[in-house]
Image 1 (cartoon, rainbow, N blue to C red):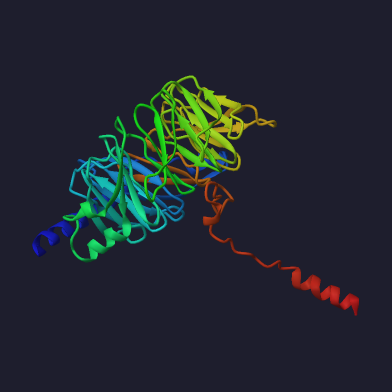
Image 2 (image 1 turned 30 degrees about the vertical axis):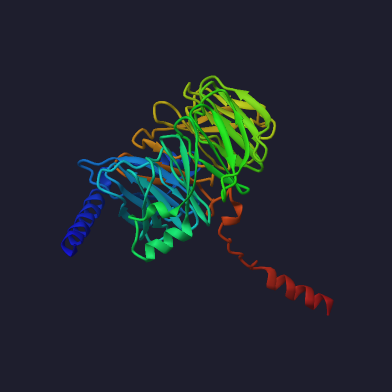
Length: 416
């Protein structure tokens, strides 16, 4: 066992050396002169851990604090989202075992690899526990403080008890006794490919048939059920009591998230296959037909659309950032009334295959297949704007006014 562990550590160390030895050979970064022209700058650039001779990036995801890249071989690299410092790099699961996109919360990263679910410490990269799943996962897991929920390719959603998981882990009984961690199972008639979502003590998920279920997380009691009569085509999102759902018949529905009743619906020119992005009361939709829509999130009114855009990327102070089919990064500028956009710039970013859609902050994150990871920001924005969870924004320092003391002294002497 010691010998095998030593070899594994040497292999990981070798990969880290290989990944960092030729960072400059990865891709060409945009020139600062080009970025300056549009008020942008490179905040940081880092390299993920992977064997570039045979490995490629498969998934790239973010939360407010961290950028994660997952390689085909099963390596995960985690970077500080503001400094680019690599927090950790870890092989999760067996080498070359397929992984779904990971999910994270305040303290933990959850990764499905094959028929196993792994938990990794978000800040240190230390593996916490591993359980065997009842069925192959069909979508990335979600969790709260008490349970983990996994949707399967067979059409069921399973709830696993976190307290029981840790109890068995400390007793050295995992993954053998994983079945004891299961609390409930909710079976549907078709596979589940869309991740469940948690909000307001409800867990909502949908089968391939388009039937949506919302249940209580603690006991699987049904809160509401509805049918869209169409397959769900993109991950759902909940914001401020509203649930946004897309179907492969080009429909986008806004539902009351607690009751499942329809508030408005919108018909796009083509299916929406990526998650709607809600930023500042605007709902951004990316269609496979090659159009990005901006809807009023409350009314569903189409405020503008960009037929030159293929995917929403980010919202900065001055731009809506999208990508086109050629891999360029588009900077869209709104007119004075906010009813139309023009393409201000096309930045050549074809080398960065993964342009992460960011509705969390105003940063722009780009990742190449070789693991080169880049963060752009608008000049002068030293602190990121937090859109979805503003309470997580770091406290900005307050600088004293240099003239305050002089003014105070003048006032005192004048009053005297």
